[in-house]
Length: 122
Image (cartoon, rainbow, N blue to C red):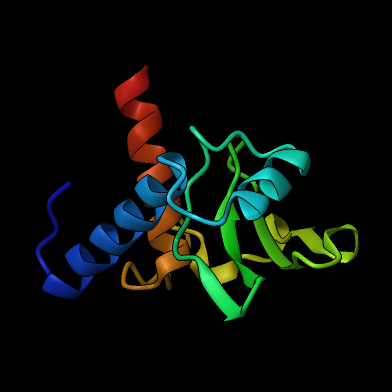
């Protein structure tokens, strides 16, 4: 997808890169397994970025195959204690349909990316 602002194109490219890395298994296998255990279909989910909090500790946001926006935090040394919270209802300006949206925001762009993929698949 092409954007008029470089910063928006950079956000799209960052989301595409992070998503491709996850979809191609270019991350810690235990993390990929944890996502799948939470019900995430890796080949359809979108990842704005992959936050490495510490060794084996990850936090971030993802868009599931059902277009739900999830915030997660997991320490892979005790993955059963990980957090996986649906925050879709609280998106506010991070929702691309919101009048105050900012396409430079990676979560907003992840939703735009998800919607574009769904349009291409239809």
